[in-house]
Amino acid sequence: MECPFCHEDNDRVVDSRASGVAIRRRRECQACGRRFTTYERAESEPRLRVIKKDGTRVAYDRNKIRQGLTRALHKRPVPTERLDQILQEVEDELTAKYDLEIPSRAIGDLVMAKLRETDQVAYVRFASVYRDFKDVSQFVEEVEPMLSQRGGAASNETDRPTGGD
Image 1 (cartoon, rainbow, N blue to C red):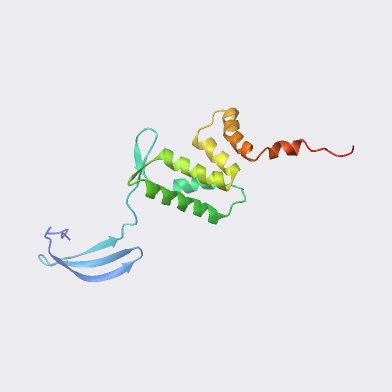
Image 2 (image 1 turned 120 degrees about the vertical axis):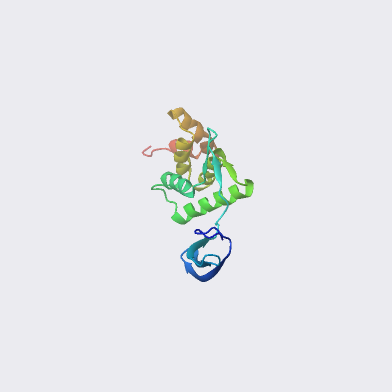
């Protein structure tokens, strides 16, 4: 460690203490005798970068995905544990597929896939923002495949007799 006073690279650790998520080390320079403090932190994970649609690169922010999921799942019967599980699954798959740079499209597509499996209303909410729907026809295009997978259950409900005959 270089001394901040004389810039010599000759010091000794006088004291070490845990200080939250860091280790506080009190050092003494062997050249000038002055003491200084350093903090040592473990690097939690590599600094992931997100490549946005316009080509800019920004730091990966887990909270942005959490906020999007929270908005999509607002007032839906999905427990918070599932939200956390989706978030972890998305991060695990992204870190398995990509090294340090992740296209934003990959993040959005993966979140949409997880929401589609979890809650279709939340999926459509997220898709409407993520894909920037401009009109109702885009909603219909997104929902039609889900309705056809249900095997016409929605149309069977409307064909039931109303009783009285």
